[in-house]
Amino acid sequence: MLKTIFGKTFGASLAGNQPPGNVPLMKIDLDRIRTLIEFFQIGKKLRYYPEFKQDIVFDTLVVAYCVNGHFIYSMESIARDPEGYPTAFHTGDIKDHTPVAKLKEFLLLVPDTSDLEMKLDYHRRALIGRGRQFNKGNYITLISNAGGRGVSTLDTEVAKQTVLPDGPYAHMKMILLAPELHTLVVTDQRKKSRTRTYAPVTISLPDGQFSGPCTIVDISEGEVRIRVRDRGTTMPLMHKGEQVVIDIELGEAEKHYTIQGSVIRRSAETCVFHLAGQYADGKLNSFSALDLLELKAALLNYGK
Image (cartoon, rainbow, N blue to C red):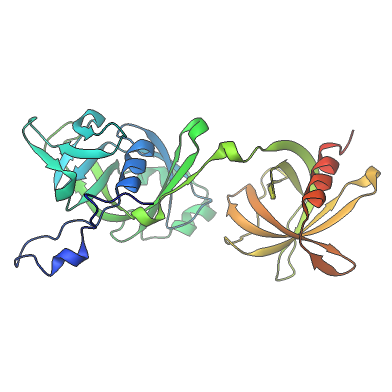
């Protein structure tokens, strides 16, 4: 169950009770706020991709939080209860603090990394377009890796480009991002043991086009990660949830598998697919636990 402040939800429901000119309190979910400040900490190096273009990934970091218009530059400025939930944000002198219950605005401050676009090849620069990645209203997806605790992603919207007049980052180009807390997702990598393998595969797209030769590089419970085999080539354009046919030919073992998969995520050189079912006698059948074990065993023994 999601934890809320004092058992209440603040936000739009209070807006009608606010005097004219007052800013309504932010609708907050303490579980997600706690997860955000755990995975997207001030000073932590992150990755991101702009406008949902997952094959264009840059490095960045959060340099500050903006709380009700005031900046905090250190994680020590956040007071927390014994369970790790934030209770207040200190925005200046120790007496200057914003209780979580009075939170109206929570933004992330990141550096303007527009110059990194110049390191992209022509194709990926064209994907970003002339509008540039940090135009107001654009989406930036942040990615945080916390080792054994998993990987977290968060969609944010560009609220403003700014140059701070003072503080530790004065006169530097910065970007304020508004987090969309409902998009905050944590993938617990410990629950999915991935096994490395190297087996040839061909991907067939719905429109009849075929990718170049690829290689399955690891497999987990119901998922495979596939990499392009030839240097300098890229994965064909595929969108999350798109259905594809995966042909696995294991040669000497005389084993052939034709599998329907759906795209989980794609980058320029790799794609992760969920294994939805296996074709037999022209029919698509769901995988049984034994089918997946047989496939994994065949892949692990390929070439041995």
